[in-house]
Image (cartoon, rainbow, N blue to C red; front, side):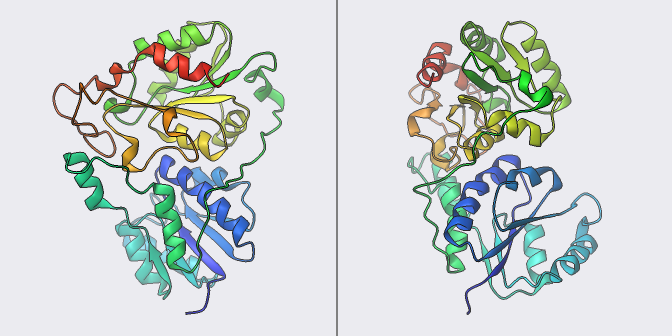
Length: 337
C-alpha cells in the first residue's frame, strides 16, 4: 500500500489517555512534517493539541449529534469530505470499530492495549514492566509505516502569562502544582496527609492546586484558604488557561491521574503518587524518571497492582497509598527545587 499522507487519528477520551497521545503526535509531526494529521476527539480536549504543527482537531460530539449508530453515521459522512487515506485508532472501543466500517478506509491501524499482559500483572502472575501507553500509541503509527523515535522529545516553551493569570505564578518563589484528586479512592492520597505536604512546602514556595468537578473545587478552595502561599485554579480557569499556568511550574505533584499526564506533555517535572495502581501497567507520565513514581509499600500490600485503573482492590487495601509518608513526598519535591 502507498504511504499515507493524510491520517485521521482517533482518541476520544479520557483526559490522561488523550494527554499521553500528545508527545507521540509531537514526535510524529517533527519526524514526518509532510504528513497531515487530523485528531478526532472531544471538544474539551482541543487545547491539548494547540502547539502541534500540521495538525487539525475535529470534534466528536458523542453525547449530542454524533451519539449512537445514527450519530456515528453522520460523523462518518462529515469526515469523508477530508479524504483521509489512513486511520490510526488510539482508542479501540466499539464506537471506533463502528466508525472504521463506516469510513471504509483500507489502511486502518489500532492500538494493542495488551489486555492479557495487564491481566497477568494485576493477578500477580507476572510482575514486570509492560510496554508504555506512549509506545503502544507509537506502534499504531508504525503499522502504517511510520516508526517514531520517542527518545529525544521536545516540548513547548512556557506561555507568557497575561492578565489575571499572572497572579498564580510568583517570580520570587518556586512554583509547585499539586493535583490531589483521582478518579478512584484507591489512587488518592488522604487529604489529611496531603495537608502536611502542603503545609511544609508552602512555607517557602508557591503552591497552585489543580482538580476538577464541583465537589473537588469546593474542597480545593477550602484547602487553599487554610494556608499562605496556596491558591486554587480549579473552577476558575478554562483548560487552555490551566495549561498556560502549568507550563510555568517548576514541578507538578499529582496522583496517578490526568493532571500528571497534562504536566508531563508540557515538559514539566512531574512527581506521581501511586496507591493500588502501579507504573508497570504502562501509565507513568511521559519522559519522567522512574524514581519520580512514589509507590505504596508492596511488602505490606503485595497484591499491588490490584487493578489497572485503581477501581478494584481487596479489603484492607483502602489506605495502601498512605504507606507513602508525607516526609518522602516533601523530600522528592524539594529535590527539584
